Image (tube, rainbow, N blue to C red; front, side, top):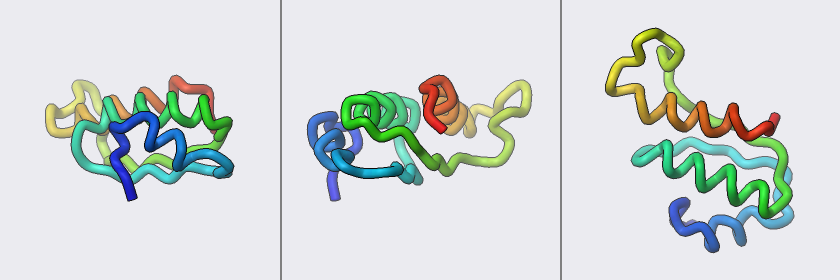
Length: 80
């Protein structure tokens, strides 16, 4: 239990983990950026991100923008 936007708390939760499962609501872009950063610091290389259908449609519907931002952060991280 914790706050994904609290970097130190998140990083400590990821130490010695094999994979991160992300299924969140809220400021998804900021959360995903923090998760990627914490994963890199903790040495975790695998992530599963639950997002939403339609995030690759052009243009992205405004409701789906946070989901696309989260996906972009994870996809750009180099993680599997």
